[in-house]
Length: 106
Length: 395
Image 1 (cartoon, rainbow over the protein chains, first blue to last red):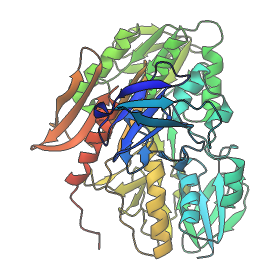
Image 2: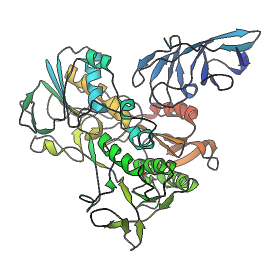
Image 3: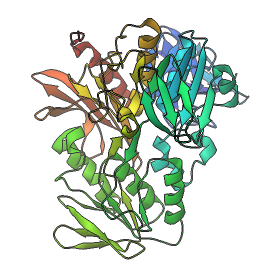
């Protein structure tokens, strides 16, 4: 388990990239009050999804506009073909906690 | 419409096939491709493929499952040589005639080279997987001195890749600043500094008089008489649209196939997409051939709607966008510049080589440039959309 930040440091519409203590970078999103965490690196080519455009529970890659559903990690349009790993994230006592999933993507 | 013929099997051609199926078209699709490969992604050819990080398999745009779902007939290694528009018949180099109810022209562009390059070993252009394999083989044999002619995006990326392989690299640019037309002089000079930062010599204002060597290149002779010695020369001086096969078709061709904003040509049920198409563009305000990866992915959707509805479809109101990865920097640009458009720094600073700038014309944001500022870029890029003034539809 990793403490990401205080919840007020991740307001709605924002994202954070976690690089410490994780096997691969993780992006944590606050999508209108609901938190999601997925692998940060686009499955198509090297780009950080925490830098992407968040709309509802979809994030659009800043490089080639592949879109991923944060609930499942699955791409909703090309060029990405492979899914992202999703991770469990929760708020406890005002802290955003990340539980990294090392299994296969959905 | 029961049959569609897509001429060109790269990103735009595949995009047309995908869009046809997404829009519910259930008829026959035949794709003609001059290369022997299924569609692959070209941008990595000058980067990850050249450095060995990617192999050819990593470039594939589709996979077996998708091709099965798309259910198209791929005629690869087949070159189209003629279009007879009235009958919408395309003739292949081997004499075969293919007839369809609609034709998508997606033949792309071919790299320009220098006079005297043909028949001289060691001189390369970079457009296809074949080109990239040949160049990679030469860059990874011994330690060749490399000269790159043209400091545009291909030239800069090849220089960056060759440098990362530990090679001695000189870039020769005719203009006073690289990328001046795309980014303006000020930002072109900033990009020029990336070469120097990484130990690559950049010669600006240097016209090329010719290539030196007999049988194999030994250097590049400049207009002022200097010679840049080189074992390998890469020519990155742009591309010309692949339209020779359309001679005599009656299509209007002038630096590309002329189209309206919906990718419709002046012949019914014939559309053009990607590098070969010169469409009416909402951002440039004229007929513009946009050689960006993003255009090759966006235009097929528009073109397919035009075909399926029979009425020229509206183009997306998104600014033209491209990116370039060089010297571990990511450059992103959206919009279209005219001389006099002034960049204004809005994030970061030039010294740290991490910044974002907005270009304005009469106070209005018309373009955005970012270097290693993807987050700022995606937000500012969206503000450009609101500035589009729709052009009147051509009569």
